[in-house]
Amino acid sequence: MDLSLSRIRSLVALLPRYTRPTIHIAGTNGKGSTTALIDSILRQASLFTGRFNSPHLLDIHDSILLNGHEISPGEYYEALRSVTIANETGNCQCTSFELQTATALLAFERAGVEVVILEVGLGGRLDATNVISDDVVLVSGIAAIDLDHQAVLGDSLEQIAREKAAIARRGRPCVLGRQSHPVVMDAIKMSVGATGGYLLYASDHTQIFQRGPPTPVHPAIPPPASNVSIHLRGERIDTTIGLQGSHQMHNAELAVAIIGTLQHNPTFQHVTLQQISRGLSLARWPGRLDWISYRTEHGENLWLLADGAHNPASAASLARYLASLPISGPRCFVISLSYSPSKPPRSTLEAVLLPGDRVAVVPFSAVDRMPWVKPQEPALVVKVAKDLVGPSGDVVARSDLRAALSWARHNHSTVVVTGSLYLVADLYRLQLAFP
Image (tube, rainbow, N blue to C red; front, top):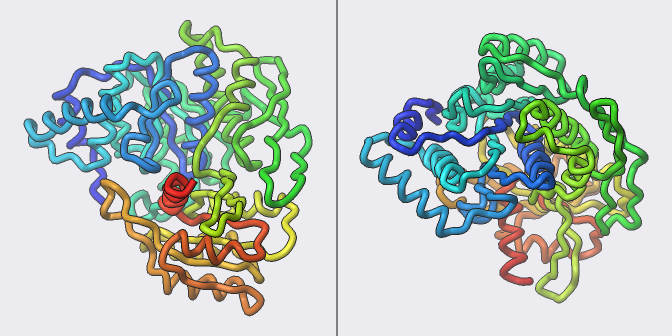
């Protein structure tokens, strides 16, 4: 993987200048959720938003949102055509992600959105999204940092933190969310200082407290949203967070703190605590602790929990969420992992699998425009899963997701589809094909 800003800088120089006010978000886990929460809040305040996330889920254009809705295929391909022509004319030789980033920026510029929420793809310093100029960045945000993509970003948490914090801009605030690893804090402080930005800690400006855990009525029925209290600028309001999982309180804290830092800006000074409350309650982020009612080929309704946990930290968050549910009987998982030399299957699976679990291992489908993404060899995943679930568990390999769900339907009250966002995308496609 050749991370560099030289190609996309050459490309954007041939396109209309990008001028949209932008909120730029990096992190290992939680950055996508944070963008979804910010977007939802700002739309409640009647602002016309653009949002770019990666990777795409079902279709290449669903990573670009205008006012909370996928960009239309017509608008997308019109922008992509302009980007492709510029790339060929200038012999820029951009990668597919660089082309997608440039397409998103051009689409936002053409649409005239009032604010863009831009998620970093990988790392930060050399990520294609970091091509935007200092003057358009309103604020940078950094969600939870953990080990991932070490082959590209570095082997230590400090190295990874420095790469991600390099999205900070001179004279602009960079808001840091809560971190699990203390070593990250100093590395980020130094990196932000080196860019000339100034570091703010989300927890110093916003506090979100749980008002009592939700009470699931049955392990196979989605639990209600978390009840929380938000404290911002000396005010308090009680609300819910529409995204499942206790870790979303930290993402919500970061999102609200970022909104708070913007309220000196005339565009955002009208955002009220009530709009923040509604935005948190209405936020949605597909593929992350998403409960789905699936109708099997035998006509049975099966509740599935879809989560794109793909590294040890996100798998640990999934494990904590499952532990909060009153699950009776054996747990069942349908799992696929992406191949990554720096991320052996055991490092992710040991965070979530327990003795006695039932596991079906499947490959995921080919990923559109991302031919380098491949599933991990199923036989290796099966071997690791068998070691973790022990003799009281059960591990099988199935040819595809539909076959795995047919196996999983027997005597399992909770079925979790996880290990890769690409597998979750297969589930959504299956649901569309067999409603």
